[in-house]
Figure 1 (cartoon, rainbow, N blue to C red):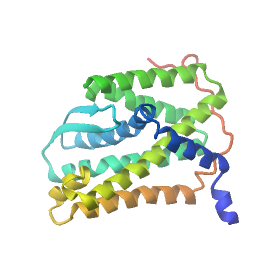
Figure 2: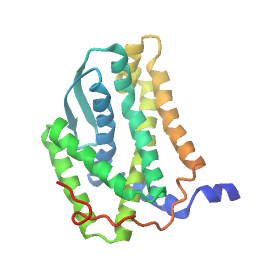
Figure 3: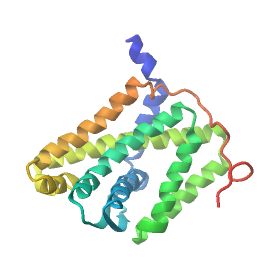
Length: 243
């Protein structure tokens, strides 16, 4: 019991619970869930660049997304299809690692960088462009006007949303692959590419890897969240400039 208490904190449970409640709220929840969708689709897109072409990414109001592109190498296509869930789980893990190391500034830069890349290169549908622009501006407003405590809590909430979504979306694809294996998105695509591995197996794999990153984060003590602060203070002028 003592070991568990050393690995977890009440603040972690409070923010995970808050993240879970927020993403259940109509409209607001779907809006915030898209940060996970952006990372998921970006994972597909970044890997696709190694053996094909990314045409566009579409983000939808219900929190879903899709990456359009062409592939020419089978193994790259296979990795591209599997990258979405892997990248979101890994990103959730990295987010807590950076918070634990008091490197929230780098996490902020990373999130803003992903948003900017998608805005400039890939996302072209109206709602997707609206989401990227509005979320980026709201995020920047909090960073500029917010106190150290507000910024720390904002980053922690985003990390918790990523954690909750990485597990819930992997669980969803697992259930769909078991019930409707021909309509299970990435799991279905991977079953067609791999031929001998069914969609159900890919669904199990996606959920297992999401749990793996949670267990890894627990063992590393990443969920023992304290008050924390940004080191150094995040700013948009002076020692840190953004062009």
